Length: 369
Picture 1 (cartoon, rainbow, N blue to C red):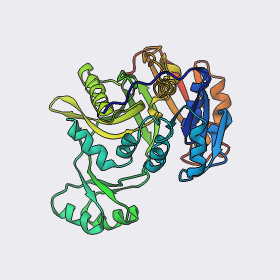
Picture 2: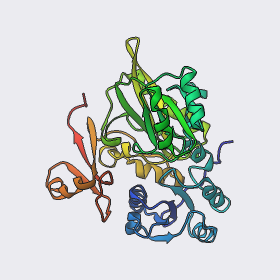
Picture 3: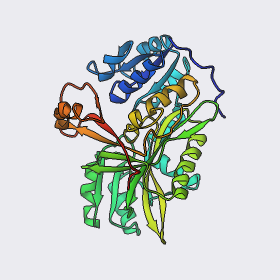
């Protein structure tokens, strides 16, 4: 059933955001630009989103007393990351609209569900099998599941966490030990030439808009650089957008989301394999803050508040985003002095290896090659 199109929340209304990290921070900043206030709910007293919000609540996601009070203070709720407990969203949904809803969150929290949905809608994925024990892993490998492969936790893994490579059958025991007895998924290796993503939005009235397909480059399993538009044939880019729209419609999705794809050369053309879904604004869409007419953060606020979606058009022939990881942020003065560099500092107090501290955007004078 499609959610009824909502009346637009007027300026002065309050958006509730579950999660206080950098994504919540940038959502709150985008809301303020539209005259909307933000109320952040997060368990960490040092959440960087608190610095830019009109109000905040420090509380556990299971604290129904604080959640109920939070719901009373807002006009609509959303979330900045997919590890919010589904029962939290279900609890809030009985008191205030939550966008996107629990259905999308539950799907995105489980890699098996993601893969099954993608295949049901006609998209390709890597071969996969559910694994819940060492015995099940060995049985799958002995039964013909090809190696090399990768074993991942079904839930809560990101930036390379919660996964282990299996290059030969004898790696099975160590790989399962790395999962710590958590339900997992075994995935075949995909011989891809590039990783790309679609960041898109769907409004409550069904309107759908996508940003340009983005090429992503990783270092140590963490996104390093995103460039838009990705170098893809027009029909392949259109296929990525169509797949994203099908997924959004099947989940009655409201808000911004991302679909990650592998680009795989097959029989002289590129084919797309769905990798993962993120039910939120996404790191690979950060370039839109300076490179598109509407940023992904403003687009998400527009969608959840019932406003018309903005234009996703590029401002220049291309745009790039480079993450500032750990001590990279110490170069902030140099970046700030560079003409054409747009620095985004997340306000985190401690720089640690592997921690996303900020990013820098640049507009490109030529279409990326």
